[in-house]
Image (cartoon, rainbow, N blue to C red; front, side, top):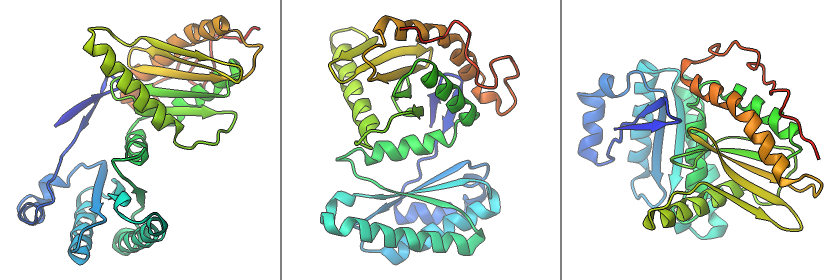
Length: 284
Protein backbone atom coordinates (compact mmCIF):
# COMPACT_ATOMS: atom_id res chain seq x y z
CA UNK A 1 0.00 0.00 0.00
CA UNK A 2 1.02 3.62 -0.44
CA UNK A 3 1.19 6.36 2.18
CA UNK A 4 1.41 10.06 1.21
CA UNK A 5 3.96 11.90 3.33
CA UNK A 6 4.94 15.57 3.42
CA UNK A 7 2.62 16.22 0.52
CA UNK A 8 4.79 15.36 -2.48
CA UNK A 9 6.46 12.24 -1.07
CA UNK A 10 4.84 8.82 -1.31
CA UNK A 11 5.98 5.84 0.75
CA UNK A 12 5.36 2.51 -0.96
CA UNK A 13 5.04 -0.08 1.81
CA UNK A 14 5.06 -3.85 1.50
CA UNK A 15 3.59 -5.46 4.60
CA UNK A 16 4.90 -9.03 4.49
CA UNK A 17 3.17 -11.43 6.87
CA UNK A 18 5.33 -13.52 9.16
CA UNK A 19 3.44 -16.82 8.80
CA UNK A 20 5.75 -19.65 7.77
CA UNK A 21 4.00 -20.39 4.44
CA UNK A 22 4.21 -16.74 3.43
CA UNK A 23 7.85 -16.38 4.42
CA UNK A 24 8.95 -19.43 2.45
CA UNK A 25 7.16 -18.02 -0.58
CA UNK A 26 9.01 -14.71 -0.25
CA UNK A 27 12.37 -16.43 -0.62
CA UNK A 28 11.41 -18.99 -3.26
CA UNK A 29 9.09 -17.59 -5.93
CA UNK A 30 8.99 -13.84 -5.08
CA UNK A 31 12.53 -13.14 -3.89
CA UNK A 32 13.66 -10.87 -6.73
CA UNK A 33 10.29 -9.14 -6.95
CA UNK A 34 9.95 -8.28 -3.24
CA UNK A 35 13.56 -7.35 -2.52
CA UNK A 36 14.29 -5.27 -5.64
CA UNK A 37 14.58 -1.46 -5.31
CA UNK A 38 14.14 -1.55 -1.52
CA UNK A 39 15.21 1.55 0.39
CA UNK A 40 14.37 0.35 3.89
CA UNK A 41 13.83 -3.05 5.47
CA UNK A 42 11.90 -3.03 8.75
CA UNK A 43 12.13 -6.41 10.46
CA UNK A 44 10.10 -7.12 13.60
CA UNK A 45 11.16 -9.72 16.16
CA UNK A 46 8.65 -10.88 18.77
CA UNK A 47 10.63 -11.12 21.99
CA UNK A 48 8.21 -13.84 23.17
CA UNK A 49 8.88 -16.09 20.18
CA UNK A 50 9.90 -19.64 21.08
CA UNK A 51 11.47 -20.21 17.65
CA UNK A 52 14.48 -17.92 17.82
CA UNK A 53 16.63 -20.12 15.59
CA UNK A 54 14.01 -20.02 12.83
CA UNK A 55 13.53 -16.27 13.32
CA UNK A 56 17.26 -15.71 12.88
CA UNK A 57 17.27 -17.92 9.78
CA UNK A 58 14.54 -15.85 8.15
CA UNK A 59 16.32 -12.62 9.08
CA UNK A 60 19.53 -13.93 7.51
CA UNK A 61 17.62 -14.87 4.35
CA UNK A 62 16.20 -11.34 4.14
CA UNK A 63 19.64 -9.78 4.40
CA UNK A 64 21.02 -12.13 1.74
CA UNK A 65 18.15 -11.19 -0.60
CA UNK A 66 18.79 -7.49 0.09
CA UNK A 67 22.49 -7.87 -0.53
CA UNK A 68 21.73 -9.35 -3.93
CA UNK A 69 18.91 -7.01 -5.00
CA UNK A 70 19.15 -3.77 -2.94
CA UNK A 71 22.59 -3.59 -1.36
CA UNK A 72 22.23 0.06 -0.29
CA UNK A 73 18.98 -0.45 1.65
CA UNK A 74 18.85 0.71 5.24
CA UNK A 75 18.02 -2.01 7.78
CA UNK A 76 15.97 -1.39 10.91
CA UNK A 77 14.96 -4.01 13.46
CA UNK A 78 12.27 -3.63 16.09
CA UNK A 79 12.60 -6.03 19.01
CA UNK A 80 8.96 -5.86 19.95
CA UNK A 81 6.83 -6.57 23.05
CA UNK A 82 9.69 -5.67 25.39
CA UNK A 83 7.11 -4.85 28.03
CA UNK A 84 6.53 -8.61 28.43
CA UNK A 85 9.96 -8.97 30.04
CA UNK A 86 10.73 -7.99 33.65
CA UNK A 87 12.18 -4.52 33.63
CA UNK A 88 15.58 -5.61 34.93
CA UNK A 89 15.98 -8.07 32.01
CA UNK A 90 14.98 -5.78 29.15
CA UNK A 91 18.27 -4.01 28.55
CA UNK A 92 20.59 -7.07 28.72
CA UNK A 93 18.23 -9.16 26.57
CA UNK A 94 17.96 -6.39 23.98
CA UNK A 95 21.73 -5.79 23.88
CA UNK A 96 22.38 -9.48 23.34
CA UNK A 97 19.81 -9.67 20.55
CA UNK A 98 21.25 -6.52 18.97
CA UNK A 99 24.77 -7.96 19.07
CA UNK A 100 23.60 -11.22 17.44
CA UNK A 101 21.81 -9.35 14.63
CA UNK A 102 24.75 -7.06 13.93
CA UNK A 103 27.05 -10.10 13.78
CA UNK A 104 24.80 -11.73 11.18
CA UNK A 105 24.68 -8.54 9.10
CA UNK A 106 28.44 -8.04 9.26
CA UNK A 107 29.00 -11.58 8.02
CA UNK A 108 26.79 -11.10 4.96
CA UNK A 109 28.17 -7.87 3.59
CA UNK A 110 29.16 -5.45 6.33
CA UNK A 111 25.53 -4.29 6.43
CA UNK A 112 24.56 -1.78 9.11
CA UNK A 113 21.60 -2.68 11.34
CA UNK A 114 19.78 -0.20 13.59
CA UNK A 115 17.85 -1.85 16.43
CA UNK A 116 15.05 -0.50 18.61
CA UNK A 117 13.33 -1.77 21.74
CA UNK A 118 9.60 -1.29 21.17
CA UNK A 119 6.28 -1.71 22.93
CA UNK A 120 2.76 -0.51 22.23
CA UNK A 121 2.51 0.72 25.82
CA UNK A 122 5.07 3.53 25.69
CA UNK A 123 6.72 5.99 23.30
CA UNK A 124 9.33 3.59 21.92
CA UNK A 125 7.29 2.50 18.91
CA UNK A 126 6.63 6.09 17.84
CA UNK A 127 10.30 7.02 18.25
CA UNK A 128 11.39 4.06 16.14
CA UNK A 129 8.99 5.00 13.33
CA UNK A 130 10.11 8.64 13.43
CA UNK A 131 13.74 7.59 13.08
CA UNK A 132 12.97 5.25 10.20
CA UNK A 133 10.85 7.77 8.31
CA UNK A 134 13.45 10.50 8.84
CA UNK A 135 16.00 8.29 7.08
CA UNK A 136 13.82 8.43 3.94
CA UNK A 137 13.50 12.23 3.78
CA UNK A 138 15.73 13.66 1.03
CA UNK A 139 17.69 16.80 1.94
CA UNK A 140 17.09 16.06 5.63
CA UNK A 141 20.42 17.67 6.53
CA UNK A 142 19.50 20.87 4.70
CA UNK A 143 16.14 20.94 6.46
CA UNK A 144 17.84 20.59 9.83
CA UNK A 145 20.30 23.33 8.93
CA UNK A 146 17.43 25.74 8.23
CA UNK A 147 15.72 24.74 11.45
CA UNK A 148 18.87 25.38 13.48
CA UNK A 149 19.23 28.82 11.90
CA UNK A 150 15.62 29.65 12.76
CA UNK A 151 16.00 28.36 16.32
CA UNK A 152 19.02 30.59 16.87
CA UNK A 153 17.38 33.58 15.20
CA UNK A 154 14.27 33.57 17.37
CA UNK A 155 16.20 32.64 20.56
CA UNK A 156 14.19 29.48 21.12
CA UNK A 157 15.21 26.63 23.40
CA UNK A 158 14.10 24.10 20.81
CA UNK A 159 12.11 23.71 17.61
CA UNK A 160 10.43 20.50 16.47
CA UNK A 161 8.97 20.02 13.00
CA UNK A 162 6.06 17.54 12.83
CA UNK A 163 4.52 16.03 9.71
CA UNK A 164 0.96 17.32 9.59
CA UNK A 165 -0.98 14.08 9.01
CA UNK A 166 0.99 11.62 11.17
CA UNK A 167 2.59 14.04 13.65
CA UNK A 168 5.85 12.15 13.30
CA UNK A 169 8.98 14.17 14.05
CA UNK A 170 10.63 15.24 10.78
CA UNK A 171 13.41 17.40 12.15
CA UNK A 172 14.39 19.26 15.29
CA UNK A 173 16.83 21.80 16.67
CA UNK A 174 17.72 21.84 20.37
CA UNK A 175 19.73 24.68 21.90
CA UNK A 176 18.82 23.93 25.51
CA UNK A 177 18.64 20.40 26.87
CA UNK A 178 15.68 18.75 28.57
CA UNK A 179 15.45 15.91 31.09
CA UNK A 180 12.75 13.91 29.28
CA UNK A 181 14.09 12.17 26.13
CA UNK A 182 10.57 11.03 25.17
CA UNK A 183 8.89 14.44 25.33
CA UNK A 184 8.35 14.76 21.57
CA UNK A 185 6.60 11.40 21.39
CA UNK A 186 4.40 12.29 24.36
CA UNK A 187 3.49 15.66 22.86
CA UNK A 188 2.67 14.04 19.53
CA UNK A 189 0.33 11.59 21.22
CA UNK A 190 -1.41 14.40 23.15
CA UNK A 191 -1.95 16.43 19.98
CA UNK A 192 -3.20 13.44 18.01
CA UNK A 193 -5.74 12.65 20.72
CA UNK A 194 -6.79 16.31 20.82
CA UNK A 195 -7.16 16.37 17.01
CA UNK A 196 -9.35 13.28 17.27
CA UNK A 197 -11.54 15.02 19.87
CA UNK A 198 -11.81 18.04 17.57
CA UNK A 199 -12.94 15.89 14.66
CA UNK A 200 -15.77 14.44 16.76
CA UNK A 201 -17.20 17.95 17.06
CA UNK A 202 -16.58 18.66 13.35
CA UNK A 203 -13.76 21.04 14.24
CA UNK A 204 -10.15 21.16 13.10
CA UNK A 205 -7.04 21.61 15.18
CA UNK A 206 -5.25 24.84 14.21
CA UNK A 207 -2.76 25.76 16.93
CA UNK A 208 -2.00 25.60 20.64
CA UNK A 209 -0.16 27.86 23.06
CA UNK A 210 0.88 27.21 26.66
CA UNK A 211 2.41 29.93 28.84
CA UNK A 212 3.59 29.74 32.45
CA UNK A 213 6.37 31.15 34.61
CA UNK A 214 8.95 28.67 33.27
CA UNK A 215 8.37 28.62 29.53
CA UNK A 216 6.15 29.38 26.55
CA UNK A 217 5.18 26.66 24.09
CA UNK A 218 3.67 27.15 20.64
CA UNK A 219 2.38 24.49 18.26
CA UNK A 220 1.46 26.22 15.04
CA UNK A 221 0.56 25.22 11.51
CA UNK A 222 3.81 26.07 9.74
CA UNK A 223 3.76 24.92 6.13
CA UNK A 224 1.16 23.14 4.05
CA UNK A 225 2.30 19.76 5.38
CA UNK A 226 3.88 20.51 8.76
CA UNK A 227 3.34 21.85 12.25
CA UNK A 228 6.13 23.53 14.21
CA UNK A 229 6.57 23.41 17.97
CA UNK A 230 8.53 26.27 19.54
CA UNK A 231 9.73 26.26 23.17
CA UNK A 232 11.12 29.46 24.72
CA UNK A 233 12.15 30.05 28.33
CA UNK A 234 13.36 33.65 28.06
CA UNK A 235 10.64 35.82 29.68
CA UNK A 236 11.76 38.82 27.60
CA UNK A 237 10.62 37.21 24.35
CA UNK A 238 7.10 38.34 23.55
CA UNK A 239 4.74 35.71 22.05
CA UNK A 240 3.67 38.09 19.29
CA UNK A 241 7.30 38.46 18.18
CA UNK A 242 7.79 34.69 18.09
CA UNK A 243 4.72 34.30 15.88
CA UNK A 244 5.87 37.16 13.63
CA UNK A 245 9.24 35.47 13.14
CA UNK A 246 7.57 32.17 12.28
CA UNK A 247 5.41 33.91 9.69
CA UNK A 248 8.50 35.50 8.13
CA UNK A 249 10.28 32.13 7.94
CA UNK A 250 7.37 30.17 6.47
CA UNK A 251 8.13 30.84 2.75
CA UNK A 252 11.68 29.50 3.13
CA UNK A 253 10.50 26.22 4.63
CA UNK A 254 7.56 25.94 2.24
CA UNK A 255 9.94 26.09 -0.72
CA UNK A 256 12.38 23.67 0.87
CA UNK A 257 9.72 21.08 1.69
CA UNK A 258 8.15 21.34 -1.76
CA UNK A 259 11.49 20.35 -3.30
CA UNK A 260 12.36 17.52 -0.89
CA UNK A 261 11.41 14.80 -3.35
CA UNK A 262 13.74 16.27 -5.99
CA UNK A 263 16.78 15.04 -4.06
CA UNK A 264 20.11 16.76 -3.27
CA UNK A 265 20.92 19.85 -5.30
CA UNK A 266 17.30 20.70 -6.04
CA UNK A 267 17.52 24.00 -4.19
CA UNK A 268 19.95 26.53 -5.55
CA UNK A 269 18.37 29.82 -4.52
CA UNK A 270 19.71 32.39 -2.04
CA UNK A 271 18.17 30.53 0.89
CA UNK A 272 19.58 27.10 -0.05
CA UNK A 273 22.48 27.38 2.40
CA UNK A 274 20.26 27.84 5.42
CA UNK A 275 19.91 31.63 5.54
CA UNK A 276 16.63 33.10 6.66
CA UNK A 277 14.89 36.21 5.33
CA UNK A 278 16.26 39.48 6.71
CA UNK A 279 12.86 40.32 8.19
CA UNK A 280 12.98 37.14 10.30
CA UNK A 281 14.79 38.69 13.25
CA UNK A 282 14.01 38.33 16.93
CA UNK A 283 13.07 41.68 18.42
CA UNK A 284 12.16 41.99 22.10
